[in-house]
Every structure is written in C-alpha cells, then in structure tokens.
Length: 465
Image: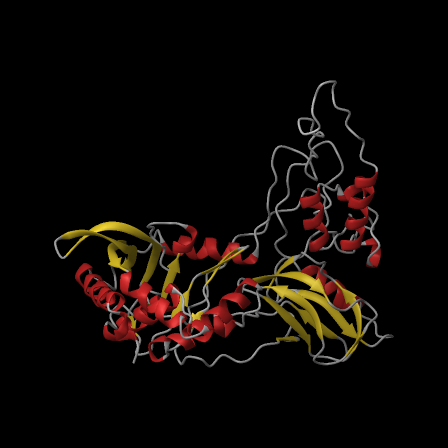
C-alpha cells in the first residue's frame, strides 16, 4: 500500500517548512527509517525520515519550495502500484496544507531537558504570495516574485510541478548562491543534474568558461594598468534591485517581534558595571590552561542565572491570565546566524560551573550557526541574554521574546576614566540594559534584580563555589 510523505511539524512552533534538499530520487528503493529529504524549519535544518517501504514513485515538491505542515510532498509505493489518485490528491491539497496523515517522523531525540512547557505555538503566519494569472499552482508559500523585465524569467524561480508540461529552469540552492556571487546568468547555463537541474559543477564550469573568454581591456596611452578597470559585471537577473525571499527563521522573527514590541508594555533599566575584577579573574583562569578559559558571556550567563535564582519574579512568563514564576533557571543566549537570530538554551544554568557553561555555550553556538540544533535545545528558556559587545556596540535595548518577561542587552567593555577612592583612574566598564514586561515586572523589581547582578559581576568570586 502506498505511503504518503507529508510536511511534518519538526519543531514546536513550525507552521510551514522549506524543502532544502531531496536525498532520494524517483525510482530509488526506500526502507523504513531512511532519510529522504532535508527541511528548513523556523529554527534549523532537519531530516525527514520515511515510515514506509517501497520505491519513491513521485516527488511533488521541488527543492526550495515552501509548504504548510500536512502538505503532500511525495509518494512511496510498489513499483507497479497505481498512484494516480494520490498524486491528484496531493496537487489539490498543496496550497491549503490539508493534512494527509502521519507518514514522516522527525529524526531527533525527544525533549526532556525541562518539565516546563515550551513557548506556545505562534499564530498562523503570512499568506502565500499569489501566483500570476493562469500560472500553475505552487507548493505552499513560494518565494515572492519580482516584476519581470523584458527578458527571460530569472532562474531562481522554482519549477512548477507537473501539470502544464512547460517546466521552468531548476537549480540547486548552492548553484543559485554561486551564480549570484559570481555574476553568472543561470538562463545561459545547461544543467547536468537530474531532469536538467543546474547544480554546483555547472555554475563552476560556466564561471571558468567566462573567465577564459573574457575580453581584455586595452589601457589608453599613458595610463597605468592599475587605473584601468574592466567594466562591472551585472548581477544575475539585472535590474535596479533584488527581492530576497524570506527564510523560515526570518518569518518567525517577524512574527515574534510583532507579538512583542506592540502588545507588551515595555520599560528599560540601564546600569554601568565595573568589569575590572572580571577581567582579572579571566586572566588568572586562562593562566591555568586552555580548559579554564572562559568568555565574558560565560560569566554573564552564570551571574544572571544566579541572580534569577534569588529573584523568581523576574524569572517568569506572562501567560495571559496568569504569571508563571519558574523554580529552575534556563538561559537563552542569542546567537546570530546568516538568516537571523536563534536562542539555544543553557538549562539549569544556576547549578552549573563556569567551565561547564563555557563548554556548553561553545557547542550550542557552533551547532546553531550550522543549523544543527534539535528543537529541545532552543525552546524552554525562562530568560534571555543578547550580547552585541563583541561587535563594538556600547549600549542597546533588546526586544523581549514572549512569553518571557525580560531580556538583558549587553554592550561592549570600554576603558574609561572614573573616580576610584577619590582619584581618577582607568577602569574597564560595561553597560547592560534590562527590558521588562511591565505586566510582570515593576520598576523596583527590575532594579533590585540589577543590584544583585551588579554585586555578582563586580565581585566575581561569588560565582565560584
């Protein structure tokens, strides 16, 4: 019996996913448990695992397509089985995301790092961009189109699915990126991948050919070679601008920010901390060996977690009809990635030492940038920290990540002239700003939390116990 392969909810907040890569081709033998595709969720790139045996009879979504959870992506069945009805059913359900049954399970461990529930799922997102008149339907929410100039359609558009017999040119994400960076027009490239799809080696060959055949520019008499430049290579697709389709993580960021800054009555508290002793402690620890090296961010995580343990009213979520104060401290640390921002979580940070926090933070940040985190590693935080100090930002205000009630923004460490014991002396200083949800935290409550945090940061031996 044929098995339907659908877009599965691979993370707690996922409403749609983008098919990054097919790992199996039509006609390939499939065994239950085989990884058949990679899907970009709102937080990471994850694997789809087959739950049926047979042959991959038909792929109904192309690489790069975005589809709602429940949308039919492919059909697995016996080689002689009639799947026409299923293929037709998938075509009708593609745009609406009608559930087709549980046929894919995420290849991940079950969540269990915390007993508290993760943040509630987000509301339904933006509607898909409507296709042009008389164009065939596309899978889910496709990338927005640009108004076409009087030339062939850019090759970044995904091919429409079976139905009109006139498939547009298809290319892999890597090929499109290389073409954009190298100024290669994909419309002039012959694809060598499955079904004529343009892949990495095709773009490399085109770039080599263009380099070999590029006309030389003769310098005018008296001009140096340095002053003569070849004419600029136009970007692929031409035009005065380029519309960049939203990634899944960027869509989620947009939703969460609209849920935060408008509805949440936010106020901000800023203090400047003396970082001289933190600097001395880091230097002393580094002298003991590489395994003892810790970053300022590691120390901040430990200090914030310890302070939250003393101020549960700040370690809280707003749940609409009630405030939930947590007895455990789970710190979300904002990590910048190419597509936006993700917050992996250090669970029970108040009970971990600096070395353990440092090792865990490095591991989580590295896998976050590689989009390899599991859902239970970036959900369940009770408080978040955003540090832009390493980018030279002196001070900023961060936006609260609901349902959390506060977030700490950390600026750069600067050496300033300050009064110490009645005399002017150079000291390392750092500004931090606490964004507070006034429905949960009053001004005095936030101020007392920052007082405790200041005492721990300016006396860091309190964190070593």
